Length: 416
Image (tube, rainbow, N blue to C red; front, side, top):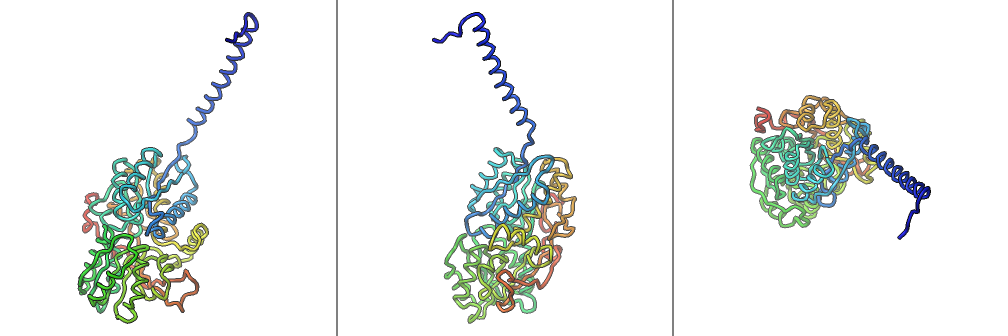
C-alpha cells in the first residue's frame, strides 16, 4: 500500500489532489453549462420511399427539396438550428409508423414531411396525432387526408386523386367520352384514384367497363394489359404510379395497344420524371395533371437548376416542389407563431397565404387542403423535344375550385 507521508508532504499531496478535482469539476461544470446553453435542434423528419418503386416520386428528391427550403429560410427557427432526419418507409405502414415515433420520442422532432404512399402516410398521421406534432402530407394522394381523416395538425399538399381525376379524366372525356377500363394499384391510393376517375368519366357521359387490381411492385403487367385489351375500352386508365406506371406504359407499347389496337392510355398519376424513364417514343401524347411543371416559368426553371445540381439526371416533380413549399410555409408559420405547438402553428399556416417559386397567394382551407391550381400536361413528340428533360407542354390551367372537392363534399369536421 502506498502512503502519502506525513506533515508538509501530506498537505502538499492533498492540496494537489484537491486542485486536480477542482479543475476536473470546473471543466465538467463548464461543459454542462455549454450544453445547457446550446439551443435544442429543431428536427423535421422526411418520410418516404428511398429504395422501392416510388423512389423517383418521393425519397431522395423530397429530402433535397426540404434541404433547399431550410437553406432559403436561413437554417434556424426560434433560435434553434434546423436539422432534417430521413428514413426509408419501404412502403410498409409499420416501418413508417416506427420511423415517425422514433423521431418524435427520441429525436424530439416537431414535424414530419412526406409520408410516402397513402397507406404509409395514414400510419404516420396516427403517430403524429398521438404525439401532438405536425404532419405535412406530401405525396399521398388519398383525399381523405383532408376529408374524413382531416386533423388540426396536418395539411395536404400538391394534389389528391380527386383533383387528378377531375383534371385528367374530364380532359380526356371531353367531346367523345368513350369507355374506360382501369388497371389499378391494389392499395388505398389506387382504389381512390380509380373511384374518383370513374366518377369523373361517368359525369362526363362515359362508361366504366371494368377494372383489374395490380399489386404494388408489379414488374410484369402482361396479364393485366391483356384484360384491358380484351375489354375493348377506348381508354385504359392506369391508376398506378412510380416504377409500376413506367413498367405498365412500356409494356403497353410492346403490346401495341395504342399503335395497332386503337386504344388510348391515361397515366392518371404520371409525373415528369416518369416520362424521362419511359422515353418520349412510348409516352408521346399521354396526358397528365400536376401542380408543378419544371419548365412552366422562369422561377420554376431556376429552382429546378438548384434541384438538378444536387440530384443529377433527375428533374423534380410536383411532390418535390410541394415538399419545398410545405417546409418553407411551415417554418414561416412557426416563426410567426413564436412556438412549435402543432395546433397553433397549423392554425397560423391556414391563416397565411402560400407564396414561393411555384405558388402565388395560395390558400389553405380549414380542412388542411392546400388549394393550388392543377396543370394539364401533354407529352411531347420526340421531334418537338429540345433535350431529354423537355418532355411536356402545359395545355390547360385549372383553378383549385374546379378540381378539388368542396369543403362540404370533403366532409371534414374541422370545416363545419
